[in-house]
Amino acid sequence: MTNYIGLMSGTSLDGVDGTLVAFGESDADLQVRAHAHRPFDGALRSELLALNTPGPAELHRAALAANALVGVYADVVKALLEKSGTSRQQVRAIGAHGQTVRHRPGEFDGIGYTVQLNAPALLAEHTGIDVVADFRSRDIAAGGTGAPLVPAFHRSLFGRPGATVGVLNLGGIANLTVLHRDGRTIGFDCGPANVLVDLWMHRHSGAPFDADGAWAASGTVMPSLLASMQADPYFTRSPPKSTGRDLFDAAWLERHLRAAPSSLRAQDVQATLAELTAEACAQDMTHHASDARDLLVCGGGALNSDLMGRLARHLPLVSVRSTDSAGLPANQVEACAFAWLARASIERKPGNVPEVTGANGLRVLGALYPADICG
Image: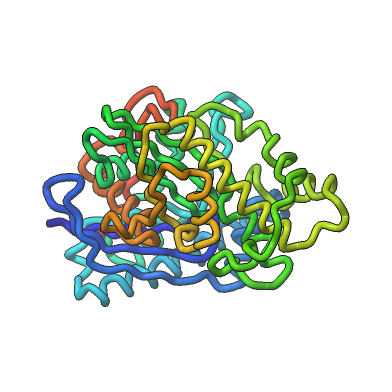
């Protein structure tokens, strides 16, 4: 078996998850040998959040933030090696996605762009391990959206012949993969998952997230506010499509709140935001996976019983459960996916699914930063 490390820091900005994964001969033959998480400190989280919108000295600040991010990445790698008793020489490569701060595929000039803050050369220097990074840009160059990138991994791990299965990642953004019974795979971003509920929670309590969805559960869904938010054209766009904080940000929320009743309680807004996520994901499941009877959920939202309950109520004929039940803990799936994508890149195998991203064909994703010291 060959060891790879996957690192993921998503739009929720809660920190870095890393997994050390041993792969066998087949794509589905994998074993997670270690998992580690490191939260972002307040200063780094605030800077990464600020860099999602235009501001002064962006290039300078982004470069320094990338260096700081890699410091956290390196700490996670060290923890993984120590936990698993693995030496750096025993790891073939690290898949490091970076932190997305802009994602505008297809816009402006017809090509668009995506920006993930990262310093992969520095990570290779810190760890002594080859690094694969910059996974999205090759797909965008081929006319795709560059996201989501995890459906190929989902297909290899969770696909079942003769059954349609949904895999829903509830990170900052909700993205759905549908693994059809006939072998077809589709995937796209449904809309916001934790990005807005975390923002609203932090604004009103200072807490980084709504633990178990308890605050949302204490509120009442406001139909007029929900309808206003659901009217955003993104929700009715046909796939392929992807989104992020470029759309679903504080300004987006404020625009809808301005038209809401002044008597609206903060917890009612939280409940409505949770319902927005649940309804969008459920509607996409119903529309694109009407024959599915299983929805496997990963990401931080899988640990939110209020959100999981809302999904289950909207999908009464579907078994809604965490990916833990399928053998991979919900908080490890995306990091494992980038270990898998790093392996595909090293082996010169395609990592995208053109039916998902809209790319002109299969492409090998990622750029390699060797750790070898020459001379």
